[in-house]
Length: 495
Image 1 (cartoon, one colour):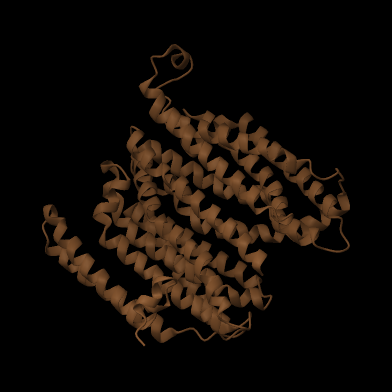
Image 2 (cartoon, rainbow, N blue to C red):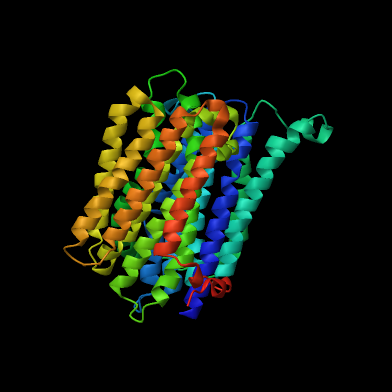
């Protein structure tokens, strides 16, 4: 258990740090790229890459862990068989996309940028292939090497982006730079930086790639595919629930400025990702603490505790971001501020998404994972329908709201369905009380903002600070006494 906690901390910390550092590219792009439409291209194409990565790995990561741990299988043969299969399909995908880059670019609406399609196709292919060596490192319990290589990519990507988008424009007159640098290429250098960073990361994985003696089995491959391909349905449905809004927007939006609107939406959507990073950090940090408080590791009370505190701290982050949005807006350039109205909506989406994932305990513990697939497919149908109907009418606000409705519905479906199979005593009264308090504080805040002149936002921020203090006081008084904090808690112990 001590080793598991250590590995979890390394994986979790590296993931959070990586996401945060990668998130710092958002202000870079919005302040440096000349037009919002350029960031719209980035938003759309990276949404496609997330979906394609799930398709190109087709559940084989999970298949590797399942079969490598079976006593009747040779782990080395499992690894090399999967590596060969993923390598072949990834290479085929990259070649086809490069050959047909122009038709694909025409279909996506970027006829003048076929090279973007080719670059990202190669990136996705390398990422799909690299997912298996990364799984191998986890199987071999090499968390430090795993985390180091993941962070290496993030570091290289940021440095290369800074070099191409910030440094090169200032030294483009140097002969060594002017011989290849094109200042009009703009957003294209974001994709160049990505492919270079991914290529270096893949080369660093070479020791893991050749770690096992090569052995390929067609029979084993058939077993692996029968096990893994059904997971593809769940994976595709799940990732589409998260990315469909940015994939469909250029096809559904009827205005002439679709890429500009998508760029504004994508940048402001990223502002709200602070919630995702904080909630992930909470799950890594607090859940082990909750479970350690229960002698029975399967205790349903532990799941109820985790849910309650997850929601409490999610509301705290929601209120903090909404009340100080007038400061947080400087994360993106002024030309994107018109889209900040989606931030509260996206924050609610992340909260519902987190609750839904916490609720997934019931079907994982009872081996009824088919319900997870059904919920994902239902959510996908909701997201798709709402976007098709409302994006042409109200633009990216429909994109944001459709995801919120999607996760709210499947959250409720998972809760009421789960009650039939595993009764977890969630603290509904406490959760309802905090929900009512949060909504009430938001109503008061927006009511004040309605009457405050635009040039006196300091007044609304002061009100927001008072309201946030009210929430914190209630939190401390009811569920998180300061005496429980490590080291400094003794100074708040009221015996």
